[in-house]
Image (cartoon, protein in one colour):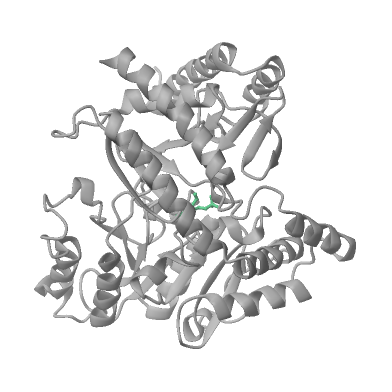
Length: 478
Ligand code: PLP
């Protein structure tokens, strides 16, 4: 007799073999050159399937090099990249000042766990200076975005002595166990068990194009944050005593603008209302600026649009100039609460990454890159709105700086998601030399986040490609 666990393993083996075959088939049909094809097939043989999440196209290009805002693959094809290397390269791929800082630091010391270095100390001081909050702050170093989220969750729970956390629909905070529990995504459908004793309570994000409460901004008077306030003011919460209430919440994790959910930009009041709720009920506000920070939204930090200083802020991606680095910055008393050894790691605050990060911050500030992102973002939104006039598939265009989401619908009245069309358009754009990420609750949104150095000429080229692909899509699908 086959026992349930054996049956499950057998079924999984069959399912995974089918998945591998499907990927090989995609590679055979869709790879953009013989070299990419050969290398991608090798990847299927060697790398865990969990690592092979191809979101930008049906079969990804194998990267050979990147400059400015353009990527070149091993077969010599060039792509205008609207993902900025997935948000890592704020000031362009291989900025000469970042490369020089890496080379110089490499001559001194690559990494030395526990022993601080001058670049790390300098970058730390700079981060405390440039992050929101007119109070005593400290920084904690980590390596990946997810690890910064884990550290913030630990700090919040330790500091408040409460166990539970609040997160939002559509939230993405990473794929380690704790971060995954805060993430709302269906990718993790089999992993939604909660770590240890933490419960994550989920509330609707201000996704105004599809309001979960059926309201319309601004007439809604921020129904979503009022709903949250109502929850905390209710009797079940323990007569406003967070330590006794059944919900026992330590803090609210929020992306000031949501990334993986499809580049969703909430009204600026969303964050300021959350700040008020946190103050009223003595909760910590924890902003995840991993995707939207470092100038992307047209200000250095997305929180600044709402004049909000979070208690803790998680920072990642761009901070290391392309080398893995992340951090939590926030109120000194919270950052210090766990004491020595409370959270650390072998590669936390890596010296090369800090040297690169320091060079990056100097360029960002000296060359006023956030202001540049505000201008270029406006230009790109206008280009999309122009396309929207001509292509009925485009239902919504909204952005803040170079953080721009575009939603495709079959019908502008019913807003039926055009997921199949979006996937087809994305892959055609890739074939014609334009990389753009597809995301969203329904897989029908385009995330626009090129490097902050992208030029208007590059935007024009990308939009010309999109225009012709959308015309083809409309002929194909309608
Ligand atoms: N938080 C946000 C908002 C993100 O966009 C991401 C990654 O995309 C993460 C956290 C996780 O960062 P990492 O992939 O470096 O672990």
